[in-house]
Amino acid sequence: MGNLLNHKAGYLLITLLLYLNSIASALVKNDFVGAWLNEDPDTQSITRSLISAEVGNYLGIHNFGKCSPIDCDWGKVIANYTGNAFTAVYSTPFTTKTMTISLNKALNRLHINTVTSRIGLPDFTSDDYFYKMTKPDLVIRDITMPTGPVTYQQSPSASITFMVHNLGAPGITTQPLRARIVNATKDGELHTFTGYFSIDYTNPLSTDDSTSCNFLVGHDSVWQHGAYTLQFEVDQNDFIDEEVEDNNISYTVNLQVLNEHDLSGLMKFNYTSMHYITDATPTFSFVSGGNTLNDVDTYYYNTTSRYAFDNLPENELVYYYATYHITGTKSTLPGNYKAYMPVNLSSLTDTERENFTIQCYEIMHMTQPWDNNNADKPTGTAYYDILQPGMIFEWDAIANSDHYEFTIDKYRDSEHPSGFGYISSEISLNTPDSKHYITLPVTGEHEHYQAKIKSYDASGNLNGQYLTTYTNGHSVTYRFKVDFNCYPELPRIKAQINKKTTSGGYDRYYLAVPNADVIPAELFTKAPDLPPAGLNQEASRTWVYIKDDSGNQLAGYVAVYHPQDLNGLWFGVPEGTDPPQGVYIELHDRRCEMTYRSSYADPYMPCPVADINGDCIVNLLDFGMLANQWLNVGDM
Image (cartoon, rainbow, N blue to C red; front, top):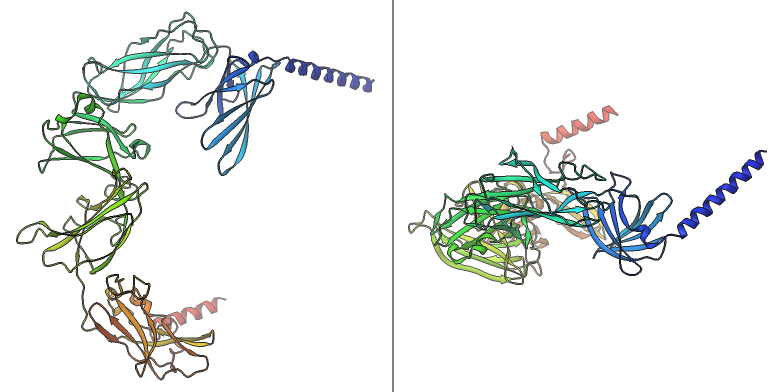
């Protein structure tokens, strides 16, 4: 009896499968047409697919992907219907999504299998399942805002337009369609708008159809001066039975209403609105006729990059400055931006005043001789670095830079008897290179140099400029003086043999200079203005020689950049050969033409055994280290 039941169950299962297969094979193009909603409301993939019948054997596939604050519209592609299943492809320059679309007609369930291919990354596959919507679904998309701040009671009046889309099934015919402003704020405080907008539409509002709503702003007393945030809700009275009732509210938009303004528009960098780069708010300043304008009202919205200025003089050339300090109140880098431009309002039309783009440029990162990423200058613009006559100027390359304008001018200090002022041009380069060796004369009393670096793209547009930030402001110049010190007398330099090794057929004797810290570090700076050492253009100011007791040179070093680098210098003799009776270190300061000799070091008398730390001096530090070693042994 059991076997008979099993055979009957198997027969019924086969019959059901054959029936379902016959249903599937009977699918036609129009079975796919409709609005399909993902069964998973929390999906991170395709949220809905709107499929329409097209001419011939084709279907239109209009997909939406999960995004915030509203789903991303992938657009519509045309697919050739080849039966169940068929293929649709979404393609971008870097990504291809190949979708296999099939339908279980018995369950009215759409299946989309997506293979995503990305350049340089492995493919990945996702599966989404959808049910067919039977009711309309209204959402607000494509909000069009005024191009700039709105002037109160301006004529003609400014307006906002948004589109109401039906992303569900057809069915809106005679019901009234209304919308209103919700969740509004004014200057950061909750603000209530009463009333609603009646929206006209053509019956029926079918799947993927839309209608627009347009309303005035700033035209009457409802729109007083202030910064507004707005959202819009469609069908707030629930006149229309929808598939999804909680997606009728739009994303948030920003609107500025001014009593009046003289200039407005967008802040951009490389033709990209600044809010895509940073949410920082810039600081503005204005100068006309050499005087700072303190009465200009400024407005800036870091979610849109829009600005507005009021109380600008009408018939004067005004220089405006805007600075984005992204990394802190005074920190300059990385990634900050600045704008500078002269403008005369009388030369602009009304339309130009309403849409005046301010192009920002990048603040350049100089690494030598001053790293403007490290810290602010400790005082004001009268703070001067002291550099050697030969120096290296180097900065990070700017993206899309075609060439750099690098200038150094000499100026009088403010303490000069003739007052602050320009003296002469010393360096003027138009170069693609971001590193330069510069030689400048020593500055006279109450004189200094000012360096400027600007970057330009291939069209000649400024896209980068050096900036120094001081504790009381910032400047587009790097200010410095040139001088050097000579040291007629130095404390006697001590030299000792630190250790001996044998390798490569040579006995190597390593020297130590226990009092290296008494030697000024300035002696070992790079000196590109002095003769190079072969191909080394950055040889140090002071060259170091190791000599024997007869004055014969045993070794020479031209790239010692710090006094402590003297520890570890060595000379070699053939393995098994007797070393000199004594050796010494000679320092030759090439800038001041001065020579210094160390004490003799005896190769036959290396550092004492009791010298624990390797400085060839036996003192309390060695005994402390020795005691620590004993304690560690005792712990074992």
